[in-house]
Image (cartoon, rainbow, N blue to C red; front, side, top):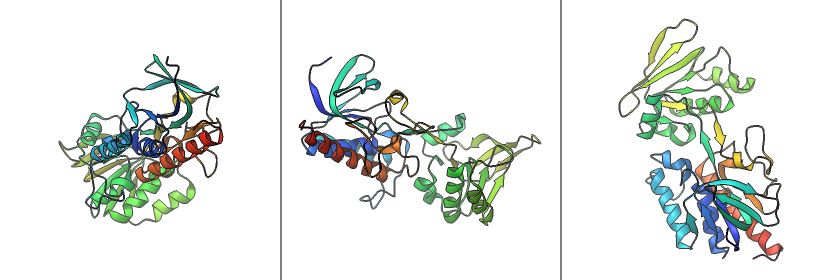
Length: 314
């Protein structure tokens, strides 16, 4: 343990964490960032990003995160490899433990631990996803790449219905794979799906395999009632079965909803604990975009700076 109490500690990286670091560093908060399990966040799994302002030709996700990191380092953010394994927010000085051994203390904490997309877990799905070959967990991010093509989406909740509707506007046909004989989505979202002329709902259907070596060439499915297998002729495969926020270590400390997303006070990044601020997908189950995550990273840094100033800690 170090006796030094830092002004600002950022838990996690990605667009939210790096943006918070840029703002905090420029405000002379001398932030320390603990990168987390996936330095750079979910964008490290994204091949092409075309909807982030400032990249007219698009950019690949890892390169974009390298740019974010370089900008944070330019202002002397202390970026450290590691994973926060425990916290103590009993305050007024907050404590975190990195990799179960190193204890750090800080007057303010910015949380940017993000969320992780849930996958079916098929070998073919994960392999083609990692190759950037047409498997995605974000239709809003990647649907445009499949404009005019036939795609499939798996899921049955509001998010799946919303993403299927988004895809229906840019793609030729959308196959919506639903495991049961009903959806979990709200009635109004279901009706919108049924009203769309180019969405076909496949009930009682499980995904067996995503076909193709490098890119999606089709999807093999099976009807759980008849055991009949068939192949969907699609070039894109979208998974919309939910996200899991990376917030487990904050249970018992921070207010969260029943799925683990952190709650923040209206029009701010303040959590229920003084000096602890929330940014990015860890507190956002609605938008989940790089640009919105970056915006909340900015908010968290500004809120942290004000908090430190008001308490004579800056």
